[in-house]
Image (cartoon, rainbow, N blue to C red; front, side):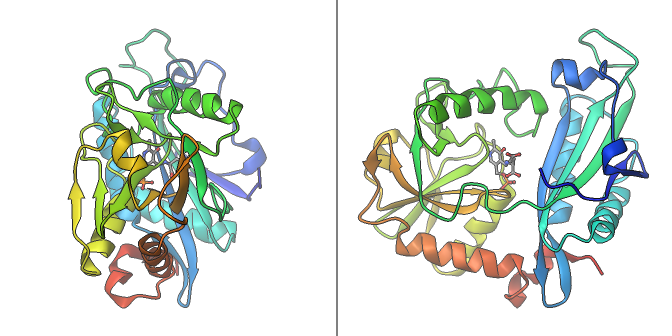
Length: 300
Ligand code: PPE
């Protein structure tokens, strides 16, 4: 991966190569960490972080699930994020926040283990490429919502995403689309999904999927553009019969979907509504649309 200069660890700026932890770190063994992924972009007013406040809020909400007390305030995390982006001199890229149970205790109850926090930054280009992606429903299903909290960005939840990714990559597809325990559409391993039918936009309701911040942004953009957006339980037949489909995510941004299980979606991907929403989203993150500027935190 592309290295940058410093990683913020518990309030200190540590050179990239020295940013190490003990092998008996609690989260490394049991997955009891929480994380965020945030993008920053170049704008006419310098670098800007997209929806930083919402990401920090979600980080703290995720931590509550584990009764993990993050030893910094949200304001300190926001301020430190702006600092670490500034100091690393990468024009645009990705920020990874993580709260984790550190070294000092083994056994599944994390109470008593120290809580550590890191903020790292690196350049990260398109996540799934520029082209519309070929996706597949894997055999593995999304975790049951009563087995974990799907609203929280918990490290351990990603074992499910890893397994789905390995499975579909082995078969030569670009990305997975996981079903939930009822057999309905849930989400990608790291993306929410949307579909378009007869000019109307649909996405699965919250409850079984991560409440994506890109999902929220795209819903708002679509509504502002006069589209009707419905949060509705979707089946794989709905996706097969859709005119368009796309993924959203911080890393994936807006990525068109070309086919599901080798069946093309719509006449041609990306479809016109996908292109429209993607264009507005990418303009918004780069500060080109005044009404969405409140989503940006400028670094300088
Ligand atoms: N669902 C899942 C399971 C998920 O991990 C993400 C983000 C989303 C939906 C979209 O959420 P949001 O980024 O708030 O719009 N996935 C992150 C991890 C990517 C990675 O490979 O690491 C991301 O996009 O940053």
